[in-house]
Length: 216
Figure 1: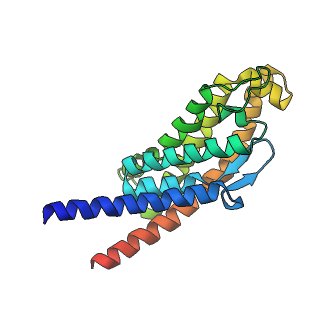
Figure 2: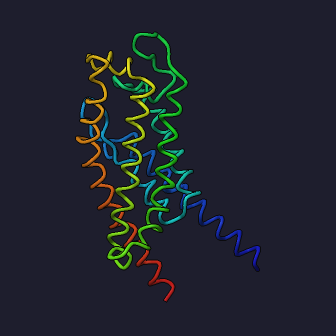
Figure 3: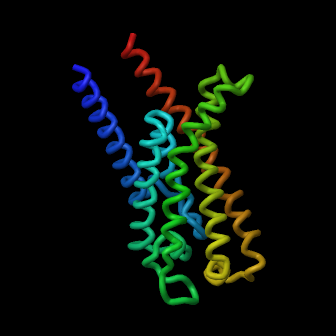
């Protein structure tokens, strides 16, 4: 009976992870997951990753983050924008005529961490006075933490690894690149983080309430 229980749990986890992965790919390749702001695609595709991390744990979250990275790589390869060279090694880097394997790092590392950070953020916030008793607040802040992880890491890795290419793509001096990066973080990152916080809190609270009702 114990083996059957373990198998059943594994099947449920696999099914839930597959469902979240399907949502990620759907959002990636439809207008629902992206807001085109010309300079870069503002995304809410990371929200299912954040929610999956909180509801299913960091292992499933990291897997979903990997799916997010894979979907991003495919999208930037088949439908490139001016900064797609930073997300796909198959898109030529400006000034070189060839892609860079460093794009794999930008495409996957931040996204995997998006699937890990929210789970531990919620646990950490559970020990913070004033917040510990407010599940909605902890979920909201955990959603923000996941979104900020994505934005900060993607943009800073892009700056450190592709400063000259970024400058050429945006037609700005190299010493102005970091200022542009900061402005993108502010313009894109803040709305994305707030949206992620609201959606994460709403969805996770609804799911956990439903699970509680089922168990009573």
